[in-house]
Image 1 (cartoon, rainbow, N blue to C red):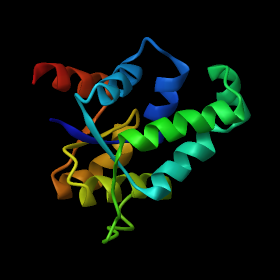
Image 2 (cartoon, one colour):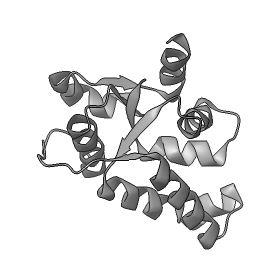
Image 3 (cartoon, one colour):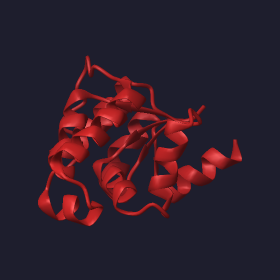
Image 4 (cartoon, rainbow, N blue to C red):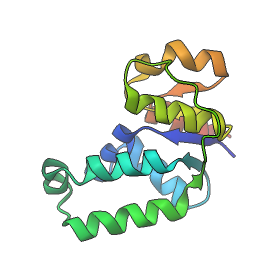
Length: 142
């Protein structure tokens, strides 16, 4: 089974569009066809971003409904405690937590729409950097 760390942009895209690859990855996670790792800082970042008014409005969800989505997601992911932080490796501190979770959680890949933000460091840790469409393609191949 493929194990991934999902960047926040993937979670947002999955919730804003039911027809895209990001949403298909969440459906695969829910179906047990994909494993996702996340740390507490990642879950807090997901919450902070999904609670923004522009995202709640686009998703058509209230704050309690977003919290329910996050609770469901938390129940699906494999929790990772980053015992070792590999920082600083990336330009964006929010990306660092995704890299930390991926490496400490032995993920096969980081799934993101911003591949170039992760590429310099991910090769050091043998972690693939995939877009949602690429990850979905790999998942369907196996």
